Image 1 (cartoon, rainbow, N blue to C red):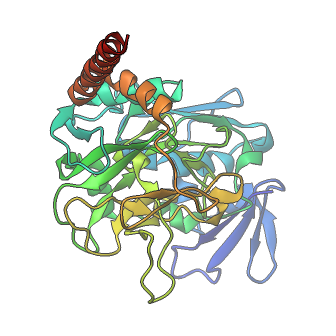
Image 2 (image 1 turned 180 degrees about the vertical axis):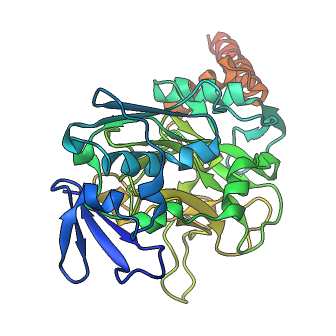
Length: 380
């Protein structure tokens, strides 16, 4: 059951608000008076933009909506609920929402700074294509670096929240929309390889002030995405869609976990210096990463993933001395075989430092073998 609450924009009307029961096709006023939804739509006394949205009658139940830009993306909630309140059989409606070929998914981003050592600042850059190839190779599925939030789903009324604030569909934030449309400057950050069990992490290349916005958390919004450690469960998204960065995402996808500081006592573990905040643009939930403290050059960016994330997954912690601790509170070893495998993948995709590391390693191994053979000859 989906209920939509609307405030009357007619100041002269005695009815200030109505609750629409989509399933029953009824509109209920505060005095418990009920009228049919069709009556409400035709009632000149009740005014609301959702009711007045232009809708072209469609002879079938599939309603397909494509968006070309950010404004079109944020119109998705209005599109869905304006069609539902005017549909003859709303329970039979199937909505298909996806970006059009004109929607820009891949960003125009300069090369990213990259280091194969978590303790050393980046001395080289890689392209977005290289990062995509490395990440895809490491994970075993295609990854696309994207600064876009993408709705790509097919769903019915059963997938929607039971209660919707129709007024919120028309509340937005021009500054946030402008920020969403503006490419981020990722030259302020660098990606470093941390450990085979953790993968990559994000570090600052310059001082970041407390309160600064790092970026939007980008990805795919969908109802039926497989469980992913990169998902945000919706709080009050008007379409009840999760946001997942597993296969589409920007640099925020690589920011690792650290717990928030709960006491004033000094900890031997690194603590979160980034916070995720939910914002709503026309009812669509977006996530913004913001610095909660001053972040110095060379520090790792860390955010608290929350308890729900670790329900089935292990928690790793970073020590202030640079070490990594596993869930059993023991130091993680180097895991040389997996590290070499990962460095080979990076080398294949053109990371020069990885290529040099592997070449030097081969030379050292050959030299050691030769030295052992010479030593054995002398002994004989």
